[in-house]
Image 1 (spheres, rainbow, N blue to C red):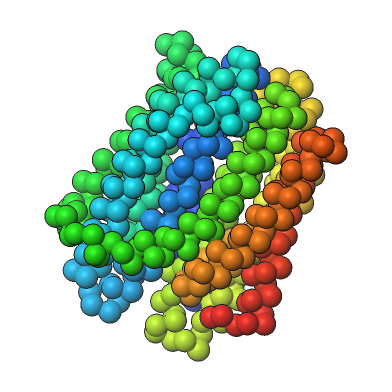
Image 2 (cartoon, rainbow, N blue to C red):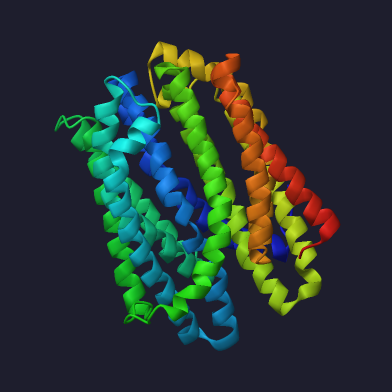
Length: 427
């Protein structure tokens, strides 16, 4: 049995609650997928298209978490809690403004975006209705992102876990109630997610107000440092999300069964990514802190985090390999969709160790505030994956071709991040 050092215990102390929060967060979408999968291939295909679009509009703002964590943590260490709360207030105001803008934009562009994603036939009105309702949670989603960043900066990963736990618990109950007993179908899934995430945002608001983070409007000037980091992070995140969105669009052009299977595979992939990202959060907190307190130990901390990442990656790969027969059945009982899923299953489990290393490297370089480098590395990886996926339909590679493109993205990321970590020593 492996003995945990003091550093290991510190990693576990931060990572375990973060793991809990990140693991349950994707359940908002995974619960939708599992329930909607019982409605048939067309509602599931509509959900796949709209989930990709929601990612494009909301995940690109995840800099609200990543920019907030180091700024709050640095202020806490340098000037105390009051300074940290001041930075938190700036982040929350930015989340409010951007949340309103993103929601209005998505509502206006919904018909055009659904057509752009290749929705046709009976899938189009289903996707249109779901996206219009689901977009109403835009402000809540961005507020949740900023609040998570604040608490991580305060070295508190437990509070976000409990908020995420109860939000997703409510979503499960509401999903079932609205979809089946009330007969709302796909729109019921959208309404359940909107209500659950809005409740989580209110919970965070009340807690942060008690802590002193909710403050009067500070003017635009204090928000500019967040936006500068946000610009670099936006390039990074948009590159990845655009490639993921392209994957869903290509799968839609392969066929209804392919995009339905892609939706299930993506939800599993995304769930795993979020769980491993707990180590990236620990990396952001620990590496950033050691850079200030004890720079000589930064490399040791980073190396240990990478070891944990590789260990977790192999563990997840083993679980996916062992669960091939039953994991897809959680999401759908459609025979054609299941056959397509099982065809790409080896690609899902075999990539996990490499994926885990990539996620931890991301956290390390974020802690080192190398956001521009991360943006360039992600852009190169997304372009490589996108070029491969654009060849899927012309060459008839099918759904497997889409997923080889997804894997190529992380291969390129691993090469660039690993090279920089070993050769450039950006820490």
